[in-house]
Image (cartoon, rainbow, N blue to C red; front, side, top):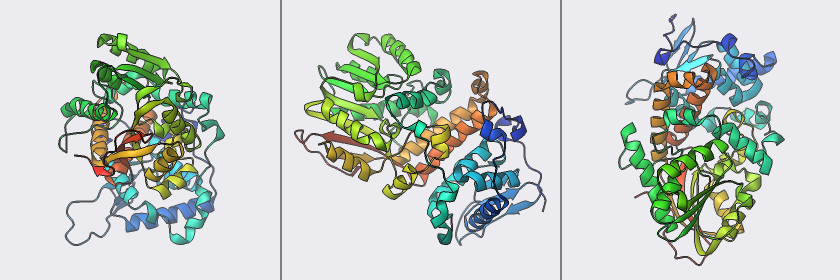
Amino acid sequence: MTLTLPPAPHGETRAGRHLVDATRWPEVARLPRASALRTHVARRIVERAFHRLPLRVRIAGVGTKVPPQPKGSAGCPPTLTLREPDSFYRRIGADGLIGFGESYMAGEWDSDDLVGVLTVLACHVDDLVPQALRGVRGVWVRSRPASDLNTVEGARRNIQRHYDLSNELFATFLDPTLTYSSAVFTSLPAGIADLPAAQHRKIDRLLDLAGTGSGSSLLEIGTGWGELAIRAAARGARVRTVTLSREQRELALKRIADAGVADRVTVELCDYRRAEGRYDAVVSVEMIEAVGAAYWPAYFGALRSLLAPGGRAVLQAITMPHERMLNTARTHTWISKYVFPGGLIPSREAIAKQSAAAGLSIVHDTGYGDHYAETLRLWRERFLHQSAEVTALGFDDAFRRMWELYLAYSEAGFRSRYLDVRQLVLTDGTAAHESTNGPLS
């Protein structure tokens, strides 16, 4: 049957590739070069996956493929709509998953449930490519560019490319605490009104794990917009917090002053490798993902050298399975190209190995990936609701689709349990031992 495609969600008019700004998005505005053979192979692989996965696939002017459903299954599978199938397959043939993301940015495919589609793909990621073709995986992936390496100068560029986009942009989807990391809720699902308290709950857990109190000294690696520093200072701690983002530092200083704790908090533009001093605790929230594997020894070495005897390093870290981390480390992905250049999510095994090499022991480790999925859902829904404000800030349709895909892609990673988020305590062996590998209580 032939279907008439519905209007775009959220009342927007979807810009086709021909309307994408070629100056801002050159590789989205034009189709890549791809041989007929590569495009044909990509089409066959993807169509095979579509046939096997619990997805409805709708093709403009053709119809809908409804997969067979297991007995007892409830509800309809999510729908992926191919608006420009030839362009979609050509991009995948040229650039694999980078092409998949760029095709979404160009409006060549869509979904009535973007997170649902991406969750299905994440759950079956190991089955998407036939076994016989996995040996030629390198044909569809690129190596990470040397320019993305997190040297001292490279790290500054990479951080600024993400965090210096606009403080106002982040305010459109974050809650008033401006906390850009997973919250901890009392129950799931949650509402947007629950998010500020859930973020404070997360921060307070980290500060408790760090033993932060009156008179203690705390170094924070990765300032964000200052909420953790504010709450630590409110406990009577002396806080030094370092960031590479000028935009974040400027707003963090204002928020710290408004909170009345500027006398107890110092905010510096400083790379963690150049931080000095010894502290009772070092806290780093979802910062390790931006370090890059080549610099993990330097990162954990810095944690060790910055701790006073008996001190604690407290991390909140996104993690992925070790084998997938090894594959990702060698690959230039859509996320590394457009969202987090130079970044790599570590595995728990990598964290354990690198911390041990630096002379640190993991004495506490809890995970709560479901809470991150919920945090991301709330951010994504708020971002979509604020689309007019995002446009008014100067961000175009291709950017909005990129950011929507990034938030949905991340949420799907946690919903499929491809990703997790952990709170860890590392010591030099002189601090009291705590439980490890425990669930979130």
